[in-house]
Length: 165
Image (tube, rainbow, N blue to C red; front, top):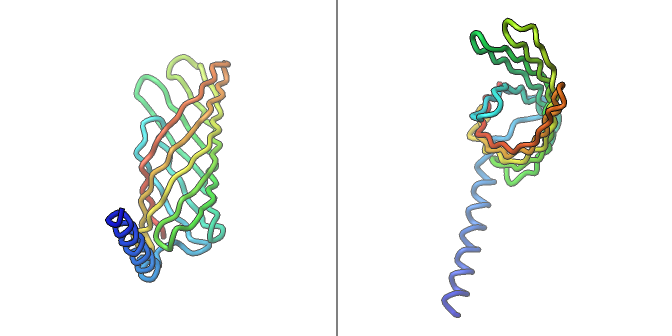
């Protein structure tokens, strides 16, 4: 029992020291008005984002993407991804967000075009390595409303890298 109390006090002391030093030395979060370019490793989407810091806690990110597979199809995506940050120090923040993406797909040789709409919710965390670069992870819950009434719901995960100008 005494060992448990000592271990708990030691862990709390170490956590406090770690948080104090990381807050004191890390000044890496982007300022209001900063613009970046984000790319992600994700199987279901291949979009790029342009995060714009509207305030200390709000990012508005236009989304665009292009997928072309020879002799099969071409898809063009455009949308918006707002995120709302909760700071956990100056170098790490968690966020919740939403996304809306319009996807237009043209199937080669058939003239069969379709426009689908994706709406989703997301949550994640972003670690700001310095004032120009961050890495993050994100979980998503997406709803795809397809033109041909073939709607779907799915989860996704992404690893995101962002360069801030």
